[in-house]
Length: 107
Image 1: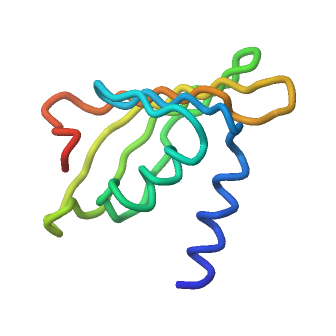
Image 2 (image 1 turned 90 degrees about the vertical axis):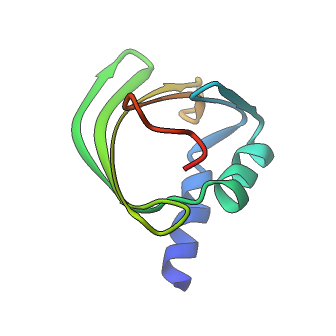
């Protein structure tokens, strides 16, 4: 568990203090609110399987599949696409996530 927590903290270092994260109909602005989302609100547990990654200029596009459990511990498989935009320092300044049709953002 300690190693997993350390990896998650390291993940936050990838993002700018000014990160804007658009997910479903929600926009999360700022690194502290971004961290709060992951630490307190996002209830999914599992792993991400990356299917496709493409780099174009200062953007990376990722297509993948999440396999795990939802907030009530039911099995969940969910396709997604993420778009990451990097600032001049190499930090992620914008992330947009698209989830497969039929998925509720509350799960």
